[in-house]
Length: 434
Image (cartoon, rainbow, N blue to C red; front, top):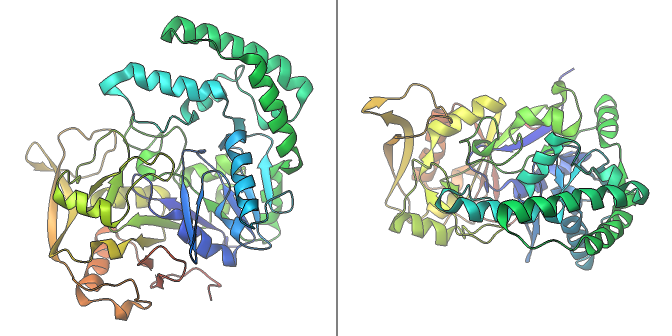
């Protein structure tokens, strides 16, 4: 039997608008599960005149009857989660054991992870990776190291947490003093804080892998919510300027504790242009007036960090690669409205290296890549009120069609604004949407 589940992944360098599309698709799902990343992923959802920015809590929290799952593959920051839950409750959004499940097997982001993130970036100077300094990479390092990792199951067990945290924090103090000449952390204060955080989240902690496997077996519909973008995937992205987890659809099975067959239909998110935060290769970047115009019109500043995003033309060569990597069935094209007002729009159709066309995109070999562009006519009309494909200007329709041709996938959804209603359903085959 074919899975009815849906996996949503970003196909660029993140910030593709996953929050809005996950919120829209939740209406046909029973579970929404995060499987990768951590509080370095910011998902924005606009409901009426209210804007919500989520970093750890899945976007299904805005819908009644949905179970939201933070899977074992997430780098879980309890301080961020508790703050986010409190802020949602203050705004009338219900969050608790009835609709939020946190994996006991998820690894915990601790204060020393964030400190190490900052200290390491500072030491690297001009060669820094450009992390969000949220401690995600160091947390995954400790996960691989095992003996210095703390899991959620240990966080909620005071008898286990206290001696283990004291020992790890003491070792970190020695390391930071030796390598970075850093001042020692207050271990007693840290222990006190994280014991309290463990008590607050304990009612929501469970075996989420078993929960999701049972749901899939029972025919429930699960939406797997990715973080960041596929070009930031630790294995398949533009290494070393990547995040620290498997953010493509390849990471769903391990990060959520479900069989590969549960991945279901894969929906790939793209912007109508390209952005990137932090360091690393970006062949179609426009560090000029065009890039600045896109940045301001698209409000391209990081949800998590507030940093201005680097902006450039749509890279169909790269997106075809990430679409193939995750087995994308259809795409959602976001922020098409941002391109309104441009006389001409470029699309990257390939790369040249040393004067020769490159046959296959290779994220591990980006030096010296020069984009090859195709120029399409722009449009001047405001498209934010369009609700059907036919209402779009002819040039905008042609742009969408060309993206489909170059990437080799249909565009199922087109976003023409931040609000829930500003979405055009085009070639989607996702079942049950009203």
